[in-house]
Image (cartoon, rainbow, N blue to C red):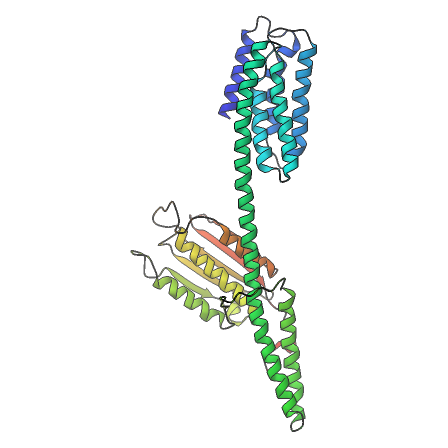
Length: 385
């Protein structure tokens, strides 16, 4: 804003130094009309047109004034410092933000050409030579800045895609192990049914119902599996008691407290509904991963804070909430850096199970992470035998 204000003051100063500022009309249009209009068009609003819609309008408006100045007899016409500044800044935004490279290059070329053509308005050799040199150098710097911003943005997008893909593959590996667990049970029960079929046929029907239930659970897991990729060095989390695993995770977190921290850094709370809820294996693993990542983030970003892990459930959803207080000390750089990709991976995992995920600061200065995961539908046949 300071740059724009200084450029506009330069336009107004040159306009005031003119012998007759108001004649012809093109003498004051760049300073009082075109520059402020382009400045207003640079602002981004939710309901306003997109950047790709505004850029052609800005180019057309600037070139129209330039052509008007060339065909109108005049003296002391202004180049339009504010107008040139807006065009060059827009060029940086276009190069840095427009996804398609060809479109970004075309729009940036148009903006740079419109800025350079403003040097023709005074119709003097000095303005043409000096103005072209200054604007060419400035435009080159703007192109370089735009390319840097574009490169950083492309790397950020690729990093996000890599994190999401890695989380999908990790979920696929977990589901692969769990499906193998289900299939082993189905094979064992099928062999048992074949063995007792001749001697105790009345016991075959319950075994078949158990096989059908296990097959249904396996198909539910398979529907969530997009791609299976298993690494030799991967050790998946085996199905088990979720609350026991979470309690062990919280205990380990407290046992590795940093020096000077309170004895109780974290606690686990689970309602009766959460303790008695029927959880699928992939849901148990996802809850474990969410709590694990939340505790890791609390240790990195808010050491010596108090962390509460809470599980609650209703008829259709399991709610996981991890909230930590503000850290007593200020820590500018967390251990291991500050990429923010862990939360992206969690969101990808939770949404893969048709759940919802939110994370953000709370009023007392701490941080809260909430995940809601759908519970398996309960049917009369899903009761354990």
